[in-house]
Image 1: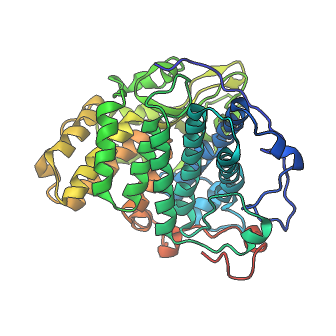
Image 2: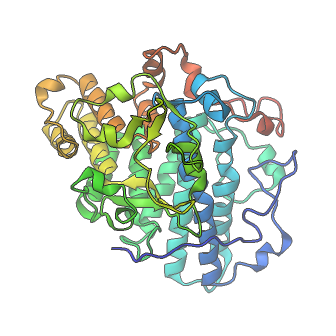
Length: 451
């Protein structure tokens, strides 16, 4: 078990404090002249990557949850959430995604570039910091291409002039970059981390598999997932409801990677947006269930009433994360990756790679269904691959509501538009991608950022 520490926010002079003029391209943020003097020791690079962990908090929570509004789970009647769920988009609705160029891609490129030219850095520190930086960069490209499709690829620090000449790479190219980053990260990170909340090789391998599956490269994903499943040391929490407590979030072997919060670094922003507890003004409820979400759970599935519900006035609730409040401070960690996802991805990839439903896939799925109080799926329930895909997606939907997985699941199988139209929307294929923010398009030559 990883030792538990609190990773505190370190404000570095070049992360989170620079500002960009309206005409400056986010791909090449302004840095301060004395930044070059900072990178000299192991401790300097370790401090720099801790700052990236802090910068990861928003992309790790805001982006997956925002994209739940883009899928068939959540909606709302105001703010960006309404724009995402109705497709009545503002000029800069996608800024929350594009912002990863400055919050993740620039700082990780900066670290990686400087690691290559700084002498005297201990090899073990160089490997781990490089692996962490590559993971965060891969994560950014994974979500950027999910949201926008074609985006620029930047793998080193560039000037503003170079940024102005950088066009959009194809979706395949961006996914290939994400896969390469995750794969390299896995080769550099330790098998286990002694620091709670820091990455290990299996976290990187998990996202490598997710990116491979988004490419529909099922056969390449299978051995990656098999290694995680067999060797990571993680396992299912035996009782599903036992996971969602402040004690379990620090000790459960189910949890693989999470964003850490505490009384010193609170989670109030998440609580305000994605919790509703009657009479608690620290929760504001900016979500409603889209048609069919509540009804999508099978009878007897314990996850439904532990995840969804309504108060006496019919207001939707998020019961999965309604724990961890200390006074007026919310402290619950947000799960980025848990072992259940590995098991379900593995089940999916095995049959998709084979081109037919495999009993091994059903066995893996049934262990999770049984934990939720449901009976086994048998071959007769999934007579063909379309039925199997629907069964996998239904299981993942029930398991991961409020964990930000649904959008990527539907995109992976090209079902996003059809699922939404089936519940009353009338979108065309353009719905699959958000437009690059207009304020970014205005910084570059006409047409360069038309994705």
